[in-house]
Length: 179
Length: 179
DNA sequence: TATTTATGTCAGCCATGTTGACATATTTTG
DNA sequence: CAAAATATGTCAACATGGCTGACATAAATA
Image 1 (spheres, rainbow over the protein chains, first blue to last red):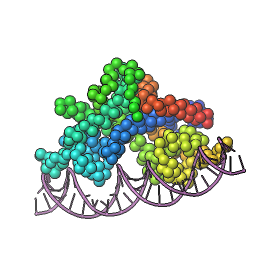
Image 2 (cartoon, each protein chain N blue to C red):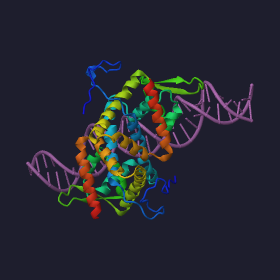
Image 3 (spheres, protein in one colour):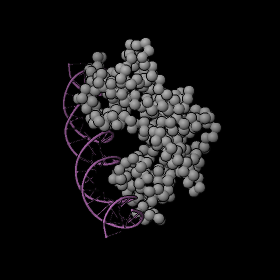
């Protein structure tokens, strides 16, 4: 796990011992992630801009669609932004009929979030644009590509968040599958 | 934009090209990409914020470091932003001694971009943060993980850009390996 | 009853993207 | 050579979506 090639035969380019030895940068993955993510979010961006929406709206709509009835606080945790930032885009989505808020049944302070049919349709449309790209990639790569991608991306997530993310994905799949 | 890929890559279960059928969204990859990319850029963000720099500075510094002597126009193409946006962050990087501009030898209108030693050090530091994450993932996934990730990410890039990206990565590797 | 919690809102700031217009130096072309 | 095209820079104005801080309200909880 920690291949410290320290001490051995002092090569010309040994880093200073105290500074902690570093593996050489993995430039190809760093750059491929940049370009892949850029294209990946680029498809939805085009559709969204026609509605005068941005990526922020997309993220909110996506997670509300995937987690019907979620609390505002949960959404803030996932998006990792402030309630003021969320409030701005959420208000627009509500005003334009993509999302609705319902008072919590047990805790009436909560405003549980749901997509409207209109909101679900938009969320689905955007997800399908991205799915076209993903499926194109999987088709090129052959069988096992989906599993390999899932494992790679999961391993790239902070280990603290990983379980939560996996649980969230599993739960959302369950909910959508029943609907 | 009309990227109707009519079975170019031999996908067995391609849906009909017409408007009707769509493959179900691949929710897990969509969400894993979101979280993986978020954590991936999160590490550098922390370091950058202490220098009152942002992601925009990171991108500029990264590509200049990887492509010493590149033209401003080339950088604009890669980043896909306007020269005004670039100008702002580039000026800060130049003023603070991370990047220098040299008049082109053949074409004296050009301002070729280079990182200073200070700039290279910062670029390397940021890349190493990301490399730690990537190597941790590869270590978890076992042999072949690097190749699999490279293939997946490459396949996710717009096919028009793919060659250019690969050429750029190869060229930059060559340059850095010689330095 | 007092406090904490869930949410919303106002006001303002910052970073980074945009468009449009224009300036300057240099190269290329007719 | 004069004219046009090119590479770059700059000024001004604006939009989006982050942020902080302060404060308000309703409902749950101690």
